[in-house]
Length: 113
Image 1 (cartoon, rainbow, N blue to C red):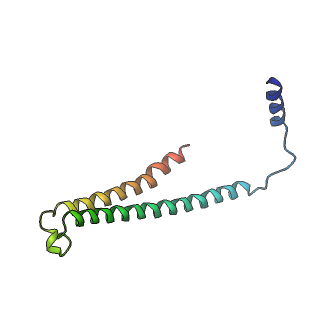
Image 2 (image 1 turned 90 degrees about the vertical axis):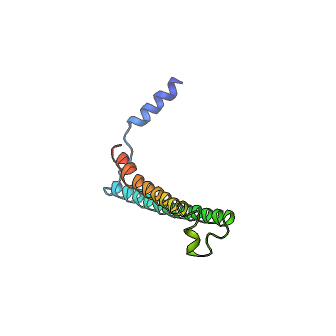
Image 3 (image 1 turned 30 degrees about the vertical axis):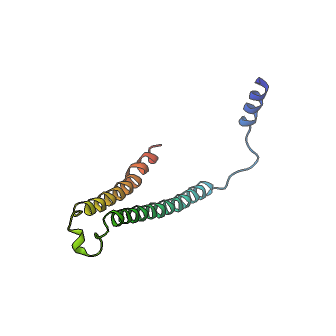
């Protein structure tokens, strides 16, 4: 086992035969940023799709259990007047919190590493 460790140490101590280009660091950073932007676009797409599915599921659930609710705007003021605005408000607040978490908190933590 010591022979392998010594061999690894010797190999790591020797200088490589090649030199990296001067713009290597900039190219690596550019590729990482491009991949992160693509990842963010995917995240926002899935977040928007999930939000639409949640709103659709909520709408379908309310329409199924309270059939006359969405026939007219008057139906919104009946027995469920507090539920729908509250559900919309909670959904919007969830989106805002996720956005702020992604923009402010996680990026600040990554900068400190």
